[in-house]
Length: 78
Image (tube, rainbow, N blue to C red; front, side, top):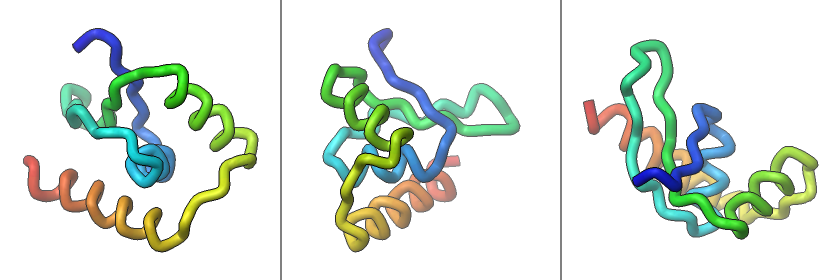
């Protein structure tokens, strides 16, 4: 998949997951950091921009569930 948006930012990855973007894979090629890879789209790019500009409203419970899910992927997928 060449059209992937990659981030190593855990909170951003959690937000994207909470907003309904599907995590395509975890890239562990760098031993010091994992990249969360999502299928790139205009909607995803808009969400990322809103995140960085503090304009995004998100359900805190959904964010917490997404963080837990990402942690499970990180620690169970080794």
